[in-house]
Image (tube, rainbow, N blue to C red; front, side, top):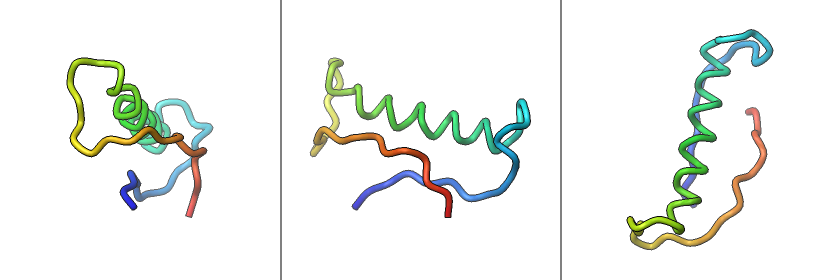
Length: 57
């Protein structure tokens, strides 16, 4: 299974925290990949998927 992950810690409720910035980037990347099916550039072996909710480890 392919997945995107980040490692770190912090308070997501603090404005402009590194944690919040990384989570924002993570979702931006995930949705860019997901919506690529609607554009001209096709990703090899792409399949439609659901972007799951954030999970902390």
